[in-house]
Length: 423
Image (tube, rainbow, N blue to C red; front, side):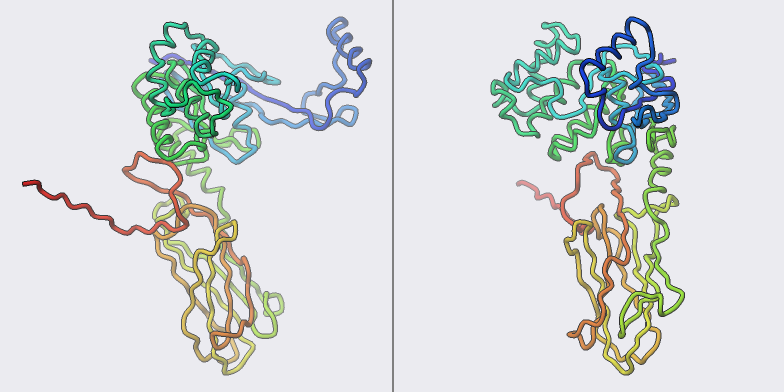
């Protein structure tokens, strides 16, 4: 049975909001003296439960985190921004102390929490490799033995004797990860920093982490918003939400739990009366819905999911040539498409429209829909902006690359290869 490498018990971390200290050097020195010499409680410290003291407020970044990892296991940590992931990694890396609880670890820890962690800007890449190695507890001979492999992996051999302050962010992270991964730590801790690298570098990093866990028996802790990478690399997952553990265990099950809360499944807007419905003297929109054809039972829209936009409106005009168009935008406002059909003759009353978006068309990302109503293909009657929004998740099979797929659309067009025989 594999031994336990990391054991976290009741880890909690609390931060003070606003200013720290009294603002007076004399009072701060008095508080220090009372606390250290007379063992009195610091008035700037917290009471259990994070209550207010002297109009100071406190917030728990982590609360009661418990887990353990055995040798060779890979743990993926997921959650929204601000969930406490980076705080937990800093505690595990011994950068900060927990307010409560204890972490027991066995072996050397190597962590990459931000670009260029531990690097000195004025020193060269070569010098920083040796400094980082010494910080990790490696002897000079061990670093020299791995030096060529580190430089080759980083892909920046031409700049190895250049001060790292002249490196781009991509070069920084290449060298930093190469050092962290090749100096054979027992525990490798990686934050979302890998997103800085290009596609080829990400593929190499993810492959290296997979080898470190599955082949070399090292323990890996990986924080990422790339759920596909977490699912493929990690045997266990931990979902943090507002500083607490929301779910833990099998990676696929935890990710499914997480995804099921990401989306508002109520992709529908419906109004009971015409007066309540958005619109004007010409058009009143009664109902808009996004209907999904899910590929899996976890009910998450991914790139394979077919979508139907269905809407119903009240036409206030009689005998009018009417058309509707659907506009799809990225969350940042770039238009993906503007589609419509030929106008039809409509009487006063309820009209219904549909628009189909096939699966394997959209790339992963955030989108919103607007609907435009037009008379005679020229006169705008009403524009219902941002009526629905939705997220599209990534999905990949039989692929070892997890970087961001280029483009706003991701159609599944075949690209066929043909081998010519050489005579």
